[in-house]
Image (cartoon, rainbow, N blue to C red; front, side, top):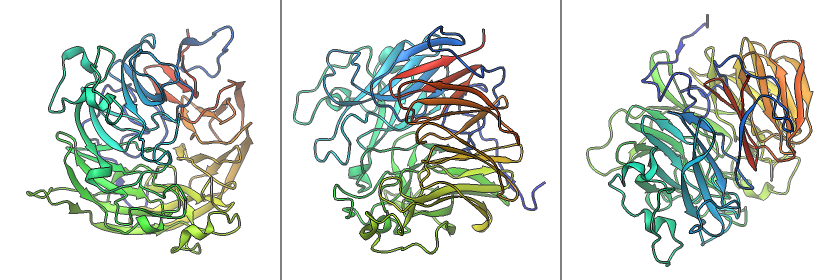
Length: 489
């Protein structure tokens, strides 16, 4: 029993009990699944333990989510499925859970203004969050969209009716939406409504609480990597899930000190009876905010109230941070992974930015009541990991290709395991197993627990950026090019 109370309130669950309708547990973001009777290995050649495999594009960074008999995953348009969609596009696919065939897709043209805002060929990087017959997503253009999970099969639901215009390049005639196209219910363009400036590609996993969506905006540096074009931009916003109205934002003046971009998504828990949103900014600082209970009766955007903030790297520079982009020895920290709540503790990983930063990173345990550090454990040169916490152990990855198993109470290292390639993906735990993949396509299954044991080690010959997903007795492994559905006979 924890020495303080952190309750994880059971809000109305997003979908079926065995589904995985968002990235990580609702709402703690812990990367642990209750699924069992799962394969510990598979054979890509003989297809042993392979239920089906589906070709994607050539770049996909989003973790698949599963809800209501459908799988939702992002990719690019290098493998077109509709002849009217030609060229580089962000693609968000809805697949049939039974066999992986395409039900519909959201195809979004790349932004023409600046390739650093929407990097070529990257595709759709964000994860969907599904609730009932609605899927919520941030597109490659920095738009928050509400999608009908049935696509156009049940007609064009409103109020948004401009899908044809949205499918077309700027100043080009609108396209005619077809049966394979997505049905957008509403759309909020964060560039226009919130004044943000995305960098490389928007990545966000939306958190739903009641009628509100909480999400990171993706705002960051411009193409020089040394200038913030939108210094007043919010990093965390709240949107009405029914209408798409922009309701609230942080006002912590994070933007000027963002070292690269805002890629960490929020989590939620009740802390001593107080509903609290946890958010990691692109300035390397973690914040706890009060939830939005009452939106403004006017169109005014409400300011979120901060409870506390925690700096995982207090000796790092906090201002004029962009002078350190080429410095591997000193500089600011950044946080890519999500903050995770488990067993009355908050777990955060971060350090020098993986592209521009110093060579130092850590896994941190923090008291979620007041933002005080409990322990710190060193990781490799960089990390993008979200932690997985299970049975008194914390699992994390780093960009050196190392898996770390750490004691949850003390932060003491238990074991490490080196894999082939760097990690962008995070560990996922289910059925006593840890599932992991690297950017060189090395896929590995380890036994969870104090003793390191390798159960499976494969070279899939395609990079892996996404975390593994488990739902309804199936393990989903997404490489850049394919989605594998694995299950025992």
